[in-house]
Amino acid sequence: MTPERFDIYDDKQHWIGTALRSEVHAKGYWHRSFHCWIVRDEGEQRRVLFQRRRDIKDTFPGCYDITAAGHLTAGEQLQDACRELEEELGVNTPFEALTYLFTATQQLQGEVRGVPFVDREFSAVYGLCLNQPLESYVLQPSEVDSLYEVPLDDLLALFRSEIDVIQATGVQTQSPSDHAANEPERIVRVIRATEFVPHGTAYYTDVLEALYHVPKE
Image 1 (cartoon, rainbow, N blue to C red):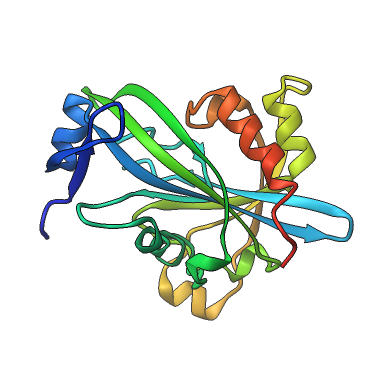
Image 2: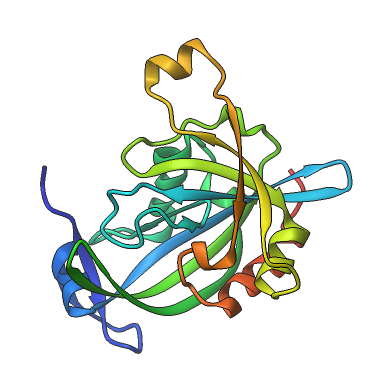
């Protein structure tokens, strides 16, 4: 498998070349990413979906995160990055169906299995209203451990520190044969804000407030 290469930028978003994914995270080069948050409406209540990252990920393994997201590889445009929805969740939707929310400038760092990383991203953030049940998503085993949903009001209250925990309903990743034979069993998790990827409180509150305005499906 060919190693991933990313376009890299200076802090003013001027393109300066390309580099391998491992080098980008080791040296903290600025690069671009795509974020998409999915909501669904249940009566008058809007619910938001988020995933738990696989424990084998090279950044923030096992953390809760954006519904679907990914880096732009070298030469890719944002409309190409919409592929993340299909790869991670089995959702085939045109880029034009997404609602642009904002672009976030993020600098995250950490250490995974003894290897430090610096993740500097210009992240284009989108929203999508998709009224389908959790069980209908096809989760990518190499990326997504599980998928959850919770009332949007509750997740916003969590990041505003108005409540300490949320109770989220989810489904686990299944093998293709399991998915064909059975509906996945629902699971319930009690989750704290500290268990999410540390994008920052402002990022989460800005996203969640904007998701109220994503057009209904």
